[in-house]
Length: 125
Image 1 (cartoon, helix red, strand yellow):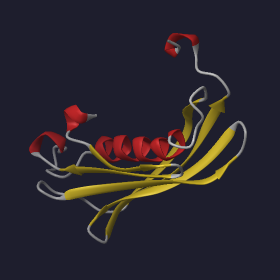
Image 2 (image 1 turned 60 degrees about the horizontal axis):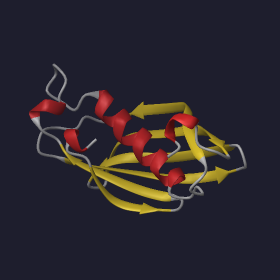
Image 3 (image 1 turned 90 degrees about the horizontal axis):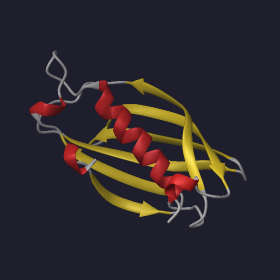
Image 4 (image 1 turned 180 degrees about the vertical axis):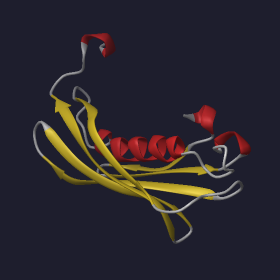
C-alpha cells in the first residue's frame, strides 16, 4: 500500500486510521478519486482494526464489504480512512468505518471478517 502513498497513522486494538493525499494517479476518467481507492482504504482500515486485536497465531480475512460512495474527492485532498471493530466473536467480526476529507464524509463501509485460530501454513514461519 505504500506504493499508493498510503500512511498508517493509528493502529490499536479495535481501531485504525490510514491516510492518503490524492494525486493524478488515483483519479478516474472523471478527474475524481477512483472508487477502488476508497475500497482499498476502507478494506485496509477496517481489517487493520481487527488485525491489531488478534493474537499472534490468529488470522483473519474479509468475507463481505459493503461500501457507499457519498461524495467526490479531488487531487490534493487528504483522505482519512478510519476503521473500528463493532463486534467480535470467536470466528466472526463485524467492522465499520468511513473515509473523510476534513469533516466531509466521502465513503462509508461495513463488513464481516472470518477469524481463524491459526495462520494458514503458507504464512507460518
